[in-house]
Length: 352
Image (cartoon, rainbow, N blue to C red):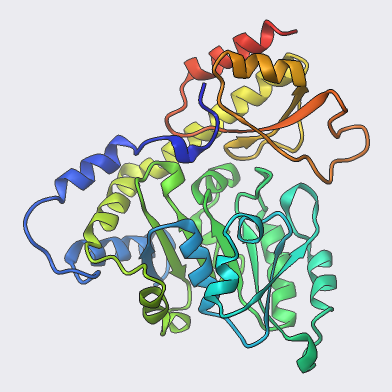
């Protein structure tokens, strides 16, 4: 009953097989090997256009370096106030961008709105040196509340970006989970909707250590090699990151694992609601945030369930946790089983 994080899961069998398969012989280093070139072409195929792809070790590096490519003196980077880059990356984006200011934007269920973004940008009027410059906008797909931006919502945010001629970045730590929820193509959810640069996450969905920065305009990536090297994320043995992606994409396995994780989350949410609990936000990917009586939470912990208490903010009146309730975060993965879900719901049923 380990629902602490999809980061706790191991690597998918196809990924491990690919790593073993490519662990032979000698190949050029620093991303000049044939496998890295081949996987880079696979990314272009997946996104239905030529893209520039750069492997990095972590999602934090992907986000910070992607935003660095668009940094400006006195730059302001707009994101939801609960975004991962705002709360969980030790100010790395601000450090890497040379002092870029992260500006938190309000929005229900972890998502910013065009109206909220417009209002936040108004605090940085163009041409006023005292206030700095609007530099970029970042959205998380899926969000920190487990919700997913629709294609229309992404396009509407891009429209606001255009009013200030700034790029739209997508933190896709759970990109595949959001993609299968929307049932669209990777192109639909990114460049066709207006995304300029993507942090493509694979570690949470079955890779061992594989993240990528994807530029949909290769011209925008002209100096990115230098940012990546300076940031310490140029792999010498790049073929092993490429191997993970090869295994990840094999037979559309990355979408199969994401769909499985989402289905496990749906099953948990349905069972929790059927046993008198509720969820703080809609369950749209592989995260759910149940609200339970505190004694039920303790019983689950005592039975060995791994999950976290979570702050529930911006909930409508009557839906927020009461004094004897607690909001929890649960995350499913490719490794979550029906037995895990059944065991959790069995314990929960015994606390009714």
